[in-house]
Amino acid sequence: MNWNIFTQFIRQNNRSFFKIFRYVNTCLFTYFTSHVFGNSYDEYMHLDKIALSTGTDKASNMHNYTQVYARYFAPLKNKPIKLLEIGIGGGHSVKLWEEYFPHGDLYFIDHISLPNHSQRSQYHVLDQASVNDLHAFILTVGGNFDIIIDDGGHRMNQQITSFNTLFKYLKSGGLYIIEDLHTSYWKNFGGKGDMSNPLAGEGTTVEFLKDRVEDLNYTSGATGYADWGKIPESLIENLNEFASSIFSIHFYKSLCIIEKR
Image 1 (cartoon, rainbow, N blue to C red):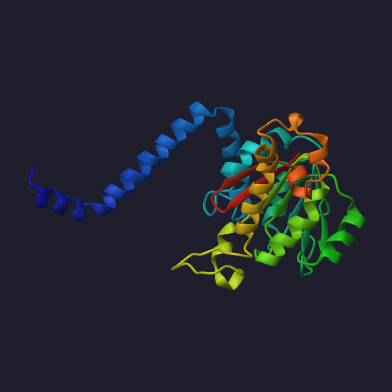
Image 2: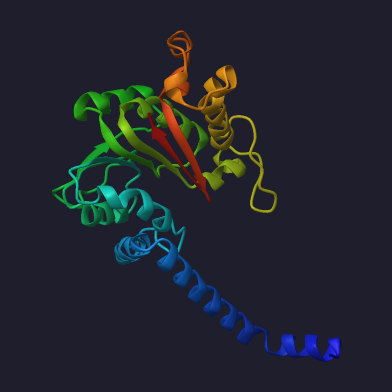
């Protein structure tokens, strides 16, 4: 084959090839997920349809967090769960979770007062970077959350303070989710870089979560056992809060899910 003729043909038909590639890629993804994951793909389509209709950036036309959430939330969707989301914004997530969790007890907090988007959910105005505000909120509504989602201001002190304060108020098996971790790489959010040179570093949420990975694995390193049931009580008694209470940590693009023991 004449390479020059081939490359010229590709340049002339670049847009068409891109469309074909995108279509084939979508078809392969649909086939793979529907055959390998079965019902979880249907659940993703269901959740994402709601997300798209409500205008939240969790949908597939933006961050596509719904692809991840469908895997974790499907077993909970018809149960009387207790959910907290930090960050109300335009109320898009309020509509999303109200429809997806029809029996859920839903709480939303933000730093500015916004009109209620429904009569069902509860709204609270507070600063997510304030330990006092967060404790006052818990005194008002109680803990025992099944899901906590941080989609608030995305600044490092906000994400870290909220996690440090609220994680203990998850129930066993509960999920703490931090969205939009890409802000750890931007100076204007507390990171060390920008879009042209993304860089995290000391004091960022990404680095904070790396330390939680150390907590998760500490007892294995200290004993040689992965099984929590084989860890001596004398060691457990001296663990820090997170080493003793984190069951698993799952990282996705711009997203981290921490499961409580």
